Image (tube, rainbow, N blue to C red):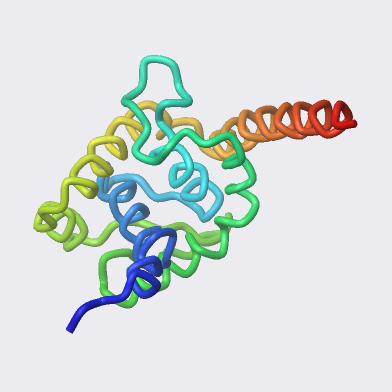
Length: 167
């Protein structure tokens, strides 16, 4: 039986894909735990590492109208975390400061058992990002969001100039 192209498109930016990205981040340093906003920032960063100076190249294309992703990605990351939690790869921990997610002992085993080149490259970028930003705490999301918002604002200004010049 052949899978139609419409069905295969459901993999891109699905809860499965965002869940695997979250597991990669959490498995990169299993002593760390992150809240949803921090994981959202990591999710954006690890596919767009090329936005950072001296970072690995981006895994996803560098298209201009991608900066609004942070605004719509939250529910996908949340659903991905729920999926990974149901598979015992992620744990949700409750503290006085809110909910935090951490990798289970199965997370690294799961990631390393996947032979897909995309997942391997994703895990390398996750390790790089976690090493670089793990101590930023709540400020990490703000930094990533503000950087994306600045690019997003410039895109709207460029679009406004282009639209304004149309006669």
